[in-house]
Image (cartoon, rainbow, N blue to C red; front, side, top):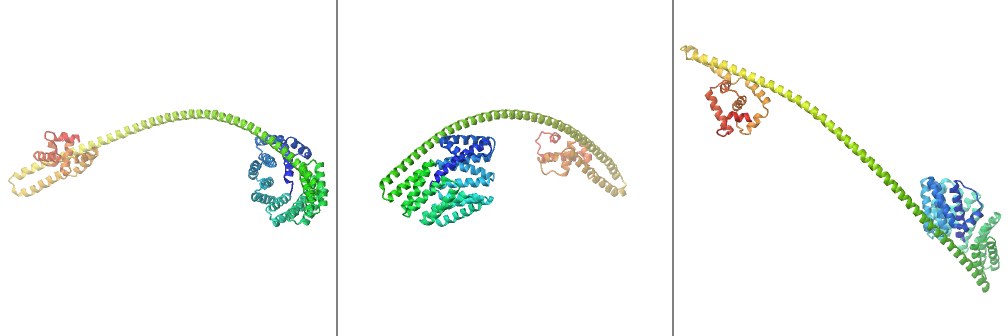
Length: 532
C-alpha cells in the first residue's frame, strides 16, 4: 500500500487536464498522459484556472453534469494537495448534482473519491460507509469494474482497522470481479493489496507470492511505474525474512527504475529501504549514506511540494478575490436592475391602483346615484299609493261614520215618535211600544258599523291608540271610541247620536275621559287628542 498518495497525485493531474478539455470542448479526447503530466508538473495552478473557467461555462450553459465533473476534479486537486476539507466540500457539491439527476455511475465514482479523502484523513468509519454506498450503486447499474474497485477499497479500509479476515475477504471479491472483467491492471493491483495484508500479518511467504503475481502481470503489461513499488515491496519481504542479499538486489533494482523514470518519491522510498537493509547488515556507513540521500530527496520533494502548494494557494487566493469582486459587481448590478425594475413596477402598480380606485369610485357614485333615483322613484310611488289608500280609507271612514249618524238619526226620530205614542192615553199599546224603544236603543249603541269604524280608523291613524295608552292604561272601549270621534273632529251632536245618548251624557263622558288622561286644567281635550 506504499506510495498510494503519490499515485493519486498523478491520477489527479490527469483528471484535471481531462476535465479542462472535456468541459472546454464538450467532449472527451484521448490525450498523451505524459504531456498532461508534464503540463501539470510545470503549471499546477494553470489546471485550477482552466477548471474554474470550464465550471463557469458549464454553469452558464446550464449543464449540471459538466459542472459536477468540474467540482469533482476540483476536489481531486485539493485532495492531492492534502487539503482534505476543501476536497470534501467540492466532492459533496458534485454528489448533490449526481444524486439529483440520478447519474448513478458518476455518483458511485464520486462516492469512492469521498471515501478515499476520508481514508487518507484517517476517518476510516466514514470512508467505509462511502465505499459501501459506492458499491451499492455500482451493483445497481451492474458495473463490474466499479464493483471490483469498491471491493478493493473496502478491503484496504478493513486492513487499516487490522481486521485482516474481512480485508482478505473483500480483496478476494475484488480479484474475482477483476478476473471476470479481464482487467489485468486491476488484478495486479489486488495481488499487491493482498500481499500487503499478508506482509502486515507477517505471513511473508504468502505476501511474497502475491507480490510476484502482481509483478509478473505488470511486466507483461510493461507498466514500469507500478513495478517500482512492487519490486521495493519484495525487497522489504526478503529483508524481513533475513535474506539481506536478495533484499538488497530488489531494492537497488527499485532505485534504478525510479532514477530511470525520474520518480523522486519512489527513489526516496528505495533509499530509505537500502539504509535499513545496510544497517541490518552492519554496514553502517552505507546505511548512513543512503539515509542521507533519502532524507535529502524527501526534503527536496517536501520543499517542492510546499512551493507548489503555496503557488496554488496564492493562485486560489487571487482567483477567489477576483471572483468575489466579479460576484459583488454582478450582485450590485443585479440589485440595481431589481431596484429599477421594482421602482418601475411600483409606479405602474400605483398608477393602475389609482386608476382602479378612481374608476371604482366613479362607478360607485353612478351606482349610488342610480340606486337613489330608483329608491326615490319607488318611495314616491309607495307614498302616492299610501296616500291614495289612506284617502280611500278616510273616505270610507267618513262614509261609514255618516251612515252611522244617519242610521242613529233615523232611530232617534223613530224613538221620539214612539215616546210620543207612549205618552198618549192608549194604554194598551204602552208595553209593546216600550219594548220597541228598548230594542232601538240597544240597536243604536251596538251597531256592527262600530267594528268597521275601529278597523279603518286604526289603519289611517297608525299607533294612535298606543300613544294614547301611554297617558292612561285603564281606558274602556267607549272611551276609545269617544277619543276616535274627537280625533275625527265630529261635533258633540253627531257624537251623541252615534253613542245614542244625550249631549249632557256626552259631556259627562268627556269629563271622565279628561280625568283619566290627566289633562291639565286649561288645556282643551280636543286639542290634546289632535296632537297625539
